Figure 1 (cartoon, helix red, strand yellow):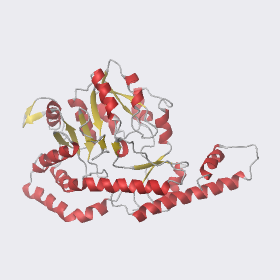
Figure 2 (cartoon, rainbow, N blue to C red):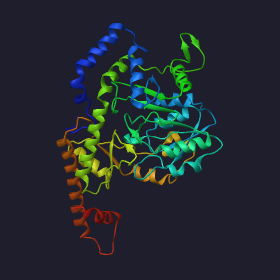
Figure 3 (cartoon, rainbow, N blue to C red):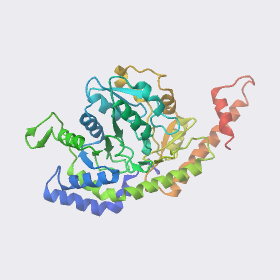
Figure 4 (cartoon, helix red, strand yellow):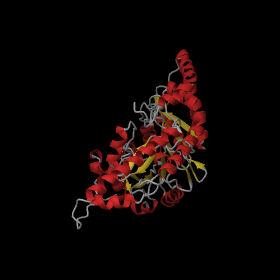
Length: 399
């Protein structure tokens, strides 16, 4: 493992180890392995965090979004407006209902849905909007809620990266008709395996999701609709119940880490994340935009610092999405940002020393890069100006 990993699960686990193992032991002693007391308790506890009436534990985040869409009546022939700058699971969930995803571009500052583009994409087939609360930052929801009201559309929040985030003082997970969360192990609230949750204030949606996750049944061997095996594992629910009380403190630590990163990187050429004034950002990821992104990533790797790219290929350009008919150039902001973004280490147990080491390495890279380009430019003909030299000129003023 790198000296500074992108995520360090061991640091989080060690102080909770005894309690987690005790809870796992309780489950195994009782051998009620699915839809037991821990799943039911977690559903209530997590729904409370989200300000929602109902929580329905499911197998993972993709299934959570898929079942939420199905419970909202989305199916073949429908269109669902969403973004391309997201993990492919957002698109898979829409496509698996039989609906067609319709992409809008993203805001160049927040990287969430560009709300100004949504209304122009609404057609007679549009049935829902899926805003993605990306990297821990909620999308701008009120204008979407107004549009949905005007056009009779459903809103299903993709909140898989936004546990504990808030929009204008309201928790995500209670803003639309339903919301989907992932408990993938690297999330702000992560299981030790897979898990997910649908939250909603709509009793009928909750009832539909509960049936759909359990083979379409409310009572064993009585099946009202065609469903799937999408149940949350009792052991994972027990683990998540141990971790849930720490979520608020962990999110606050992430916010403090982001502020420190922002301070240390302020005099470098990178663009640091911007939290919209109307949100509580919980920094599932800390994502910068960086000149010479790939070279910077390689330099950090050489210095034992892990990074990630979330996400290098926009969904509308993925081979799996070719039948949706999108071509390169149709979502220019999404496409440009995909070539510039870099995720730096972010987890609650990062130390100030870790953050300083990462920032120092970023600064050293750009100092070396500017020096190298300046030396090269001195040997070139006066009339030749390359893209690298233009960029080096804009970068050099930081040092």
